[in-house]
Each structure stands twice: as structure tokens, then as C-alpha cells.
Image (cartoon, rainbow, N blue to C red; front, side, top):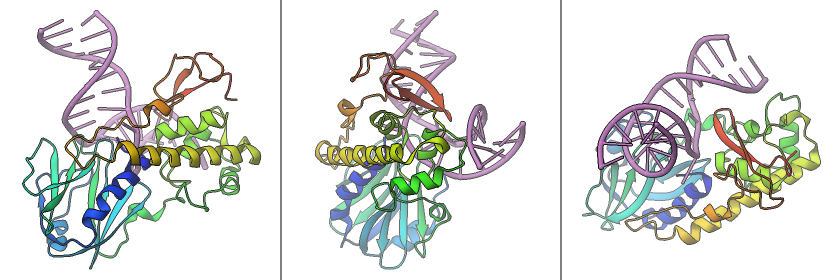
Length: 269
DNA sequence: ATCGGGACCTGCTTGC
DNA sequence: TGCAAGCAGGTCCCGA
């Protein structure tokens, strides 16, 4: 479910309910996530007031008076704000009970997500991350320079979190289509002017998806948090074999570094 | 340096 | 209708 736009939408959705509230209890029903949940999470967070909720890459960081906890939603994770007496459903693994009468509930069927306790706001997983895609640090010049000499596909490059964070499989496919670049092209051979178009496309598609998430996922605080919000905007992802919007030729599919890749052989070169 | 594959999981869709 | 295979929005780690 979550790519960066959905993580950011989640942050915006839960932050107003969390900030200023105190955590009265933490229930970890299933600690076996991607990494085991440390008992410290419950011990240290209980009794503390939430300061702010921030995001780095696809990690949400809930800052407390002392320390913080960090959540990654993996492939199937979600966070909801619910009344304290809300019925438990399958895969509801962690609750943070608030003094407001609400709770923050983490659910993750596939358990590819993770929740960490951060005593000092640092974590090894945060150490080697590239710039945020929507920041000024992520520019055509930056990507051009980072790509010189690289013998790897452009799709592999932009999905590498050491280069730039938050570009998942859907938006990598979409941004490459919109900038007319074939996903298999070697990153080291792409010109600065083409990188200009690519970076613009990445920023535009992510920003647009965040807006879409903000409108159609606004009710994700309720019981059903159905996504699918950006689906009608997708030009290539999930459309292998269908006609290209621009030229009508059949969209091609292949795997790049194990991930489903779709492109138009006529429009993307 | 880069890539492929396996790992971690469940659930939904597809095909026989 | 049932069942198995295949696939999924992430990302880390290993071996080649």
C-alpha cells in the first residue's frame, strides 16, 4: 500500500490527533515484524507526551519528550486513529493508547513493516539515505552527477534509497514514462537536460499523488482506509499490454531488479 | 560496482 | 467449486 505519498498522507492524518496527547499505555500484541519490536518501545513511550510527527523517507517518526519511535509501513502496513474501545481485527499488532480517548493502531497483514524505539533520534537505517525527492537538494544537477560512471539502469538508480528516497515502483515507472526515458537506459549515459525532465517528473508525480491522497484518503481515519486513489492517474503501472495514452502502441512489460516495469517502446527511448 | 535472488509474510487474483 | 501457483506498493543481505 504505502509509497511515499501515502506515508505522507498518513503523517498528515494522524499528526493532529497525536501532537499534544499523552500515551497512557502501549500494547504490543505481535512483536514479530520485519525486525522484532523491542520491549523498550512500550516501556519508554508510556507516560510520555507526543511532541511532533515527522517523516524521513518512508519512515514516520513520532517525537516524544524523551526519545521517539519510528514506524515503517512495509508493503501492507497502515495506521489509524480509533476510539479506545474499537474492536480488534486480524493483524492489528500495536496500539498506542492516548489520554484523549483515542488510540493509534498499527496494522500490518504481511508484517514487512517495523517499529523501532529511538532513544536519541538516530538509527542505522537512517544513516545512508539520500535526499528527499521533494527537497531542493534533489535536483537534476545532483542526479546527473550522482549517475556519472554508473553502469546501471536509470530505474534502478532512482529506486535506490542511497541516491534518493521515496521513489517506489509505481512512481519510478510513472516518472520515467512522463519524461520519455526508457527504464533500461544506463544512468551514466543520460544527459543533464534529460535529467531535468526526469527530476521534474518525479517531483510532479509525487506531489500530485500526495494531493490525491489528501483528498480521497481523508477518511482513512474511519474503519475503511481504501486506497486506489491515484489509480486513474496511472499511465503505465499495471497497464502492460494496454495502449499508450499518447501514441496508442501496446505498453511493454519486463522485470528490472525483480520489479514489474512497464513502458512505451515508442515514447520512451 | 551492480545485479539477481532469497528472505521476511499474508491475501488476493488467476488458471486449470 | 477447489486448489495451487503467482503476484503484490519495501528493502535488507548475500553471493556471483
